[in-house]
Image (cartoon, rainbow, N blue to C red; front, side, top):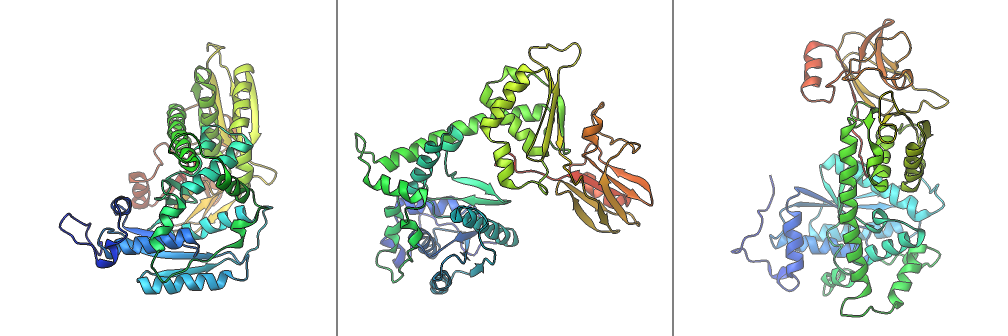
Length: 459
């Protein structure tokens, strides 16, 4: 149950809230109150400290019903970072907001330390969000949006890249909300005026060896466009429009994905008139297919992102249109296509996508009675029998999975799990193994439950 009710017209904000509580802040409080618990990512810099102070004031004014907590990630990249985390903890104590600091022990492996820090930061935040059932909040502003758009445009991109920072996204399993994307930095920082708290200043934010900082400097000196709107506002609006277009294209790609059954059983296999679709929709569909079946364990996220980039997917779509039969391998996934007998050779292809075994092949997993595990990071397996279960890849001679389609290739079947006990196969994938009642039925009957793990498609 929430500690404070949502504000009504009869509620009077506290005296501390009256001076700064604009309609924009009230709107933020109203929107965020739909989330029970908010985990604020606070570094101690001006943006995130302003977010913390502003939301704490909203809470005190009974204009925010959500519970607040703060996490600071100490990346260990600068000697001052420990003191900065301590400062955030002191501010949280004064504001009455629960606080935790996380020190990262690992050192950056990426060439770009900022990219490494971002990945590590979201990983730590997502673990805390999972523990506390929280939504993560970051203090990205319209200035960040403009910088990101320019960086991506300079590298070459479409509406997906121009959409830049999303108002809401799912990263590493956690929901991330960015409520200040329409605000300038100056508008957000104004909440700190008259408070005793001084934000920290990270010298990397002015270090022009970083691409983002160079674009930040360019934006500060850029001539204003005609009219009253500033360049940052214009670029932020461009990102917003691109985001709407990107969502529409993803919708059409997801419709195609569902048409071939999705990857809900760990593979894709079906007929589709792919060439009837616009090329960019074909490319997004292929990315969904390959991302839905790819092995996570043996392939890094950066390798998958590179393998499934839209430019490569466009090239693959063109291959499929021009080659009656073919095979593509990359990013831990395999795609085969061919045109069957009687099919319109100009339009309809049979697509078959599955996980790539790689040089080491698929693993074996032992699961004791009453326990569960994840096979190859792709399938959830629960052993409710009274015997030890060994989960391995399907092989010739094993019973075929009881699925809703026939004629699956041997190569595809070899990417799927079976459960073996005392030398006998006692479990295979079955149609309907998507959780819920099926999982409960397996528990009650003392059998094995086996299902593909859900993927964050389109993220």
